Image 1 (cartoon, protein in one colour):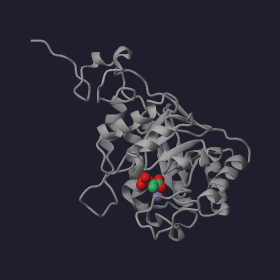
Image 2 (cartoon, rainbow, N blue to C red; image 1 turned 30 degrees about the horizontal axis):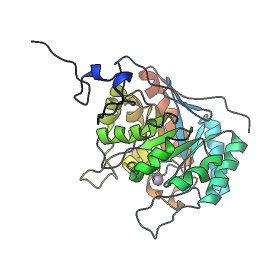
Image 3 (cartoon, helix red, strand yellow; image 1 turned 180 degrees about the horizontal axis):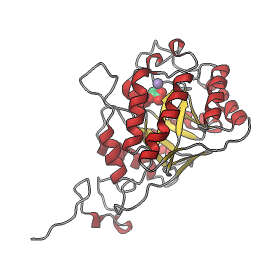
Image 4 (cartoon, helix red, strand yellow; image 1 turned 90 degrees about the horizontal axis):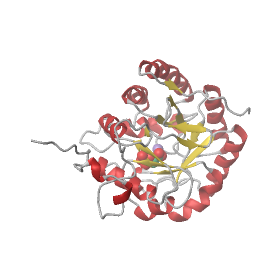
Length: 305
Ligand code: PEP
Ligand code: MN
């Protein structure tokens, strides 16, 4: 009896060749490893690298609220050697009555901080029009959980060169997640970073279910860097540090953390925001976890302030 080696999608690996990419197949191709030893590709986001042995952090407020707020955060990031700032200018809020983000003004604040502090900047876009609008101010586009299957947005992002951090839809299977990544990769220009941010479960003590198994599976089967967002996964600041440590231990290539100088006053996601002091503490505690798996927490030398 002979056995045929199937990949994770039940497809014979022999089928994944450049010659048959044109075949009408529904299986993801561009995001999958063609051989199990293929290393993770390194994606550069401004001064930050994702997918290398060193694990970078992305930290910043859920919503950009003011220039001063970003300055306070950026100063701490610089001190810790965290090179990537996040901050929402356009917010995908469940309720239309909730704060929707400062839009263009927030982009300008992000752009100014990026210049002043030499940080990489990542921010979410929700529509095709926002791609060009945000382009001058950021190094990486974020596609949020709610837009993971906004196919026109994904296709448009695939036609431009900046990297895209694609968050997993909160009800998306891993197959659907990778197919969404393929929409961007098909354009042949923009690199993709995957982000596990928790999926919906039946419990309400945590905001979502942090799917750590998915991180291990993605690392095993794709060559894309995988970042974990323990903030949206848990929804509670005290749960973020343990979830962040577990994420590093399971093989995450980066962490995205929501932080705020005054968490209780945050205009969005106040419950899950780490204070700047909590960020410093977590950063210290992550080093031995990374070392235990033969990696390190990235600590780049940044441009002087
Ligand atoms: C965010 O990062 O601010 C956000 C809205 O995340 P998600 O799309 O994962 O809910
Ligand atoms: Mn948020």
